[in-house]
Length: 78
Image (cartoon, rainbow, N blue to C red; front, side, top):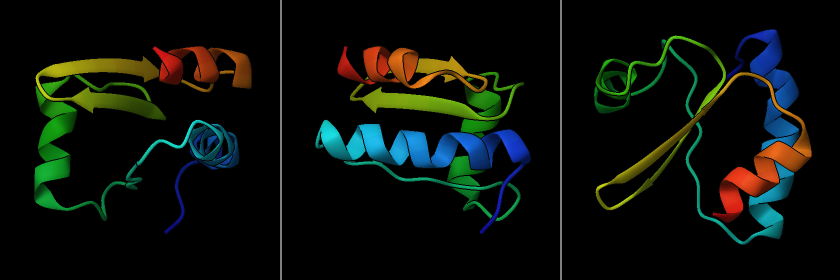
């Protein structure tokens, strides 16, 4: 599965940081994502790609756009 240019640029950075922080994750590319994942796009008003949703119980954090590793690391660490 291949995403947009910015998504493809973020993918290895995200995978590196998530692995270093030992975080479980799932990665999806639209329009190939399952229906329940597509619903998240509307539920969380995702308008920019790439977008990372951090979901923990009822808590949802959103980071959108191509960000440097330092910003991604801080987002995933909190």
